[in-house]
Length: 169
Ligand SMILES: [Zn+2]
Image (cartoon, rainbow, N blue to C red; front, top):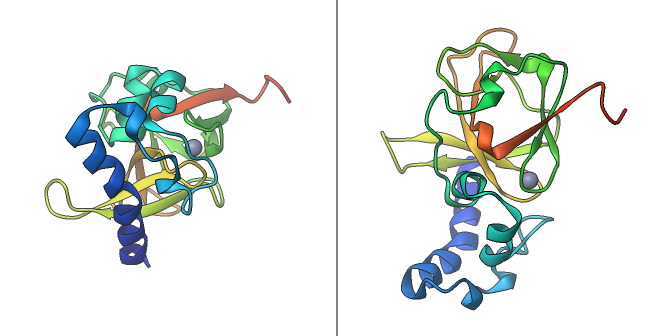
């Protein structure tokens, strides 16, 4: 299953990567190249306009923010963490825990909120976590988390926007 997802992701993103490297011109990107895979798709130029530079680097370029750099590390209010790319709620404060890693960490995502793929870019194999709706890269998941799941969803704060439960309900 994960392998299939990984392959699908590779096929979807390869044309973007190749064109981006070859020309460096956002305008030449093919709008349709990721459309089969995610509900929300935008061109690289559109994402650049929509997102802050930090958000863009993490969500669209799979970058990892510096540990301890996100204000969300110290966020302890009740509420939901939304994808910064498409606003889909991806994590609840009830699943957040102090991992000591410097990245906001959760034991589980919200139901039907994220997808995973195999990331072989660094230190062998890791499981990459992305937004189910826009494909934005959120972080990685590891098997060394606390109960009840034993999972540690190690997220980039830059990829998320926190909305306190007291607002907008
Ligand atoms: Zn999203």
